[in-house]
Length: 126
Length: 126
DNA sequence: GCGCGTAGGTGCTTAGGACACTGAGCGGTA
DNA sequence: TACCGCTCAGTGTCCTAAGCACCTACGCGC
Image (cartoon, rainbow over all chains, first blue to last red; front, side, top):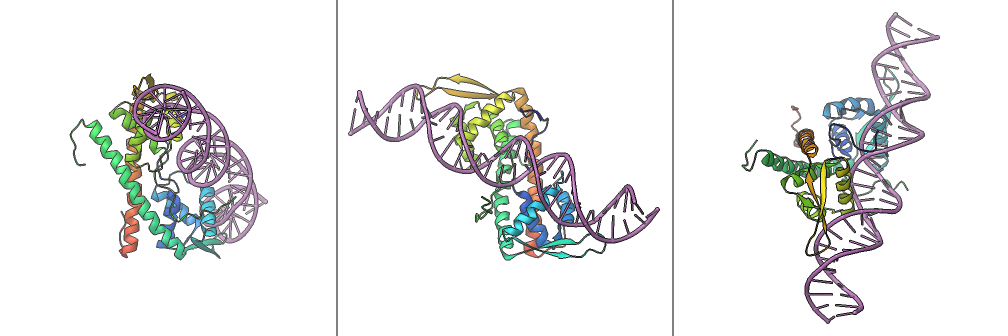
């Protein structure tokens, strides 16, 4: 890429480490293995799917004690490393929810201010 | 090395490059200089104020053609580099608004799914 | 044997963000 | 006048997340 940002679309999207929060939630809903989570993440808004990044994150989260993995045979394909949530992971999921509420609030604040600007001065509810 | 994330609070918060979006908006509302923007950013949700990062970002955005700066005497203190928005910058501001609406939608989706989980009401998704 | 879908992973590079630090102009005051 | 504190603008440096490419292995059908 050129040194100067030249894309015609903002590069930003999701909060840092948002994938971690999603993984905690998904694994809490139902223990799952990486390949499965990859597909679920896609539905959650992670368009550019990056298996490498996902697997790295999962291993890191296990090392930090947020997840616990165990190998399970698959029947159709190689064995799966299945993850479940630890108590610590559950605490973090709650903490993440708080952080993301704040994120949504701040982004929402930006958007109302943006809308007020483009609509002139009058404020209106969307 | 490998300090193995041990913070007791999620590190994530705001979307990548969110400061850029805010700067476009703020400068559009009213041309301003860096020190001024620093304080306005604080009110917008940027708690850990980082002058270095801000000034670097402003210079970068000017190099990309989103902002235009000019020196103005201050009367009380050193001269100020005052920024205004270019047409291209305006386009990017609109594009950012779109991106951030999507961000808010995805984060909101996470939060409703989280709330459904903790409330035990898991019979419905968006 | 071969390709294909499933499953899990490594290497490498870069862009952003965090944190520390520098330096200059100007006013007040001790 | 010497110092301090506020205003204003930067630089240096490190760390991490993110992005991209690439690799291995299992099992099935052809």
